[in-house]
Image 1 (tube, rainbow, N blue to C red):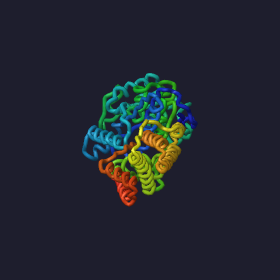
Image 2 (image 1 turned 90 degrees about the vertical axis):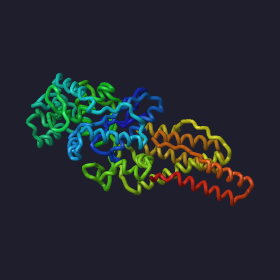
Image 3 (image 1 turned 60 degrees about the horizontal axis):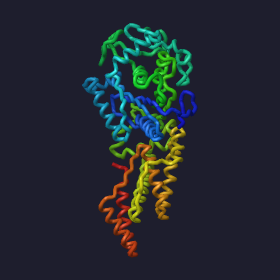
Image 4 (image 1 turned 120 degrees about the horizontal axis):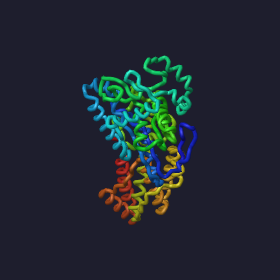
Length: 442
């Protein structure tokens, strides 16, 4: 298994049997949009695949439930911050279930780890990597000046030029970022330095340190998090442990809509919950698989329509394969097994387009096997496609209804008695049922 590392800008082999993963989660002040779901779905596929290969995976996905955005939104809707964040936290869990994300066991929330965060910040202060200024605590960039900017490929002097436009008399260096913010506005906690709340960048560093250790195997998130969030996480870990926070970095490309990045600030978003009001979850997943995960992807109604057409063809062909077994009174033996070609595709930095191409080849073989009554080849390719779709988080299950079973029997009997008008009629009835069950529209 090879992963493209954003830091070294090279592909690296994952040779460990135990893989740790950390994927930055949402700030729960609103529902997530489909762009937010792309990293989650990508990591879900990686998780499924690594476990299929026999790896042990420890996966941490945080929840940011304290932030200025939460405070402002709570005031706007006349709720407490905890009420607002708790509501959207459970909405998020519901969305994860609806888009068929494997249940994550480690999903730490910031508000449940304030003491841990305070202890983490104090360690940085004790090492003189952070300092207190008028009740605020800042990370001292000068202590990691040799490594700051390595992830985002930015020059420190250029960053300083931009930062000087935002002068803060409390900072020693304009690039120093806040670890603890002194404030009595909104939700806050007492600390050794002031009453306030933690800064954004420290939570992920703490969670990796607490639940994984000094370094996570794979750290991921949207490409927009590379700077400053991931850069600042990395800086804190280097200051505390002497090593980067991640062995490998995965950054997932954003979604464009009308030639602009989909984002809440621009207002050009499609919420996942709204998408799922119109389409089944498989459509969203399949749409993402048409493009390599690092690359931006353009959203359009035409591309969604194409994804639906693709899924209809795949699911209908699988239905026809199982009906062929029933018609010919053959038994399908299912084994959870994926092809070497599919393994090669996903092993090559989760190459979604190549993986999709493998499935299309197998769908073609299924069609040929049905025509040739080659049930050995048919059985093998059915197993491959169903298993590979499962790795992609798309569940297929053939349901043989009593009515379909009766129709297939009449179809078979009419073929055997050469009553072809009747056999055509019942074949068409079955085709209609296949079409009705495979619409992928709500």
